[in-house]
Each structure stands twice: as C-alpha cells, then as structure tokens.
Image (cartoon, rainbow, N blue to C red; front, side):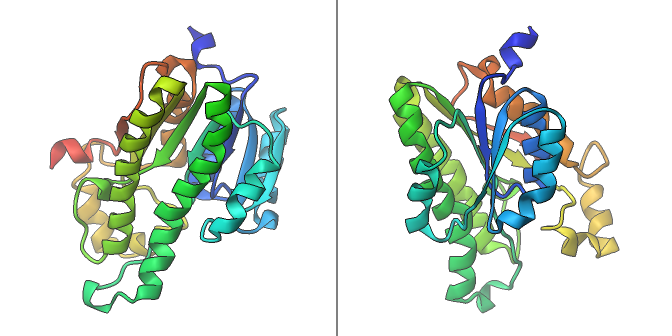
Length: 250
C-alpha cells in the first residue's frame, strides 16, 4: 500500500514555496520521496526551505520566478528538465471594498493567481504531455465556492482556478496528465495574518468551522501527496476541500 503513495523517482515543482502553505507542501512532497523545484519571486527567499529539503536527503533546485512576467515563464521552465508533479501555490490576496478596487489591484491579484498559474501550467504540461504522464495540483480556495465581501479580485481568481482545473483535466486526461485542485479553508499564514489579528473576526470564523480549529500547513500534505501519487491514478478534474468541515456546514 505504501508504494502507491510513494513519490520516489519523481520531481515536483511547487510555486510560491518560500514560506507558508507552499513551504509545507514542498517539504511534505520531499518526505514522500520526491525531489523538488521550488520557486519564489526571489531565489534568496528559498534558502530556508531548500535547506530543510536537503536535510531529509532529497535534491532541490531553487528558481526565481514572478508569475506576472509571463514571457519569462517558459524559458525558465525549459531550464529545469522533466517535472512530474506541479503544485500551483503562488498567490496573493488583498481585501478592498469593491467600489475602491483599482485596475492595478485587480491585475496584480488576478495576473498572479490565475493568469500566471495557467501559463506556468502550460509550460510544465508540454513536457508532461510529451512523456504521457504527470499530475498538476492547483490551489483553489473557499472563495472558489462562496462569496467573501471585499475579496472580489481574489475570489474571481480562485473561481477561475477551479474552472481552469476542470477544463484542463478533460483536455489532457486521455494523454496521461491529471489536473486536480485543493481548496484550503481558513489557514493562518503570513498571507492571511492581517485577518487573524482581529480577535472578534477570528472568533466568529472559528465558530463556523466544525473541527473548531484553523488549518495548519501540514493539513494539506496528505491530500497533495495523494493527488501527486499513483494512489489517485483515476482521479482528475476534482477539487478537495480541506477546511475542517466549513463548506459542509454552511
């Protein structure tokens, strides 16, 4: 049974892996046996996670990649060699009343979370399709399913991620490339810390989560390893909510 979950001999790329959920996912994949390519806008920011991956005996390459610079994505990916698993984790969030959203804010969030994720997927998938196998895992969100006030650009980008996942999964399934998503619930990370500083808000959110706790990065690892491995060989086009029961309870 352990062998179908093993990622030994495979190479996984995790975007936005310098900290938070991306770092937890990268480390989890390494513990499952994968070698890693980790990306962030700054290669220096990847020093810490790279050291952790090497400490458990896996190989790791660090790549500076800004997903808003679409023209740079394909040349960067072409330098990497074969990638068996892609986790599209890089993303940003910024709350703003909808009447005050600027074009720059919209572009910054949507170009990073959705446009950049697509063109990274496109670049990596070319090699996967040529080899006839691969697993792509996109980071969706609760906002892929429910509306969140003051988070319109973010929710739009994450709804787009869900649509992209389903469309690509049907296009590439017969060619051996699977495309799935996970939808994290309320996780306390550097990206979301601004919300959790509001104690009243945090208490109200916690009351809506049946497990009565916020998520931790390690809570994502099992689902990601499952979707990356042969254990999910007949799974594509799906989105797994990892939310402590939040969506089921609303």
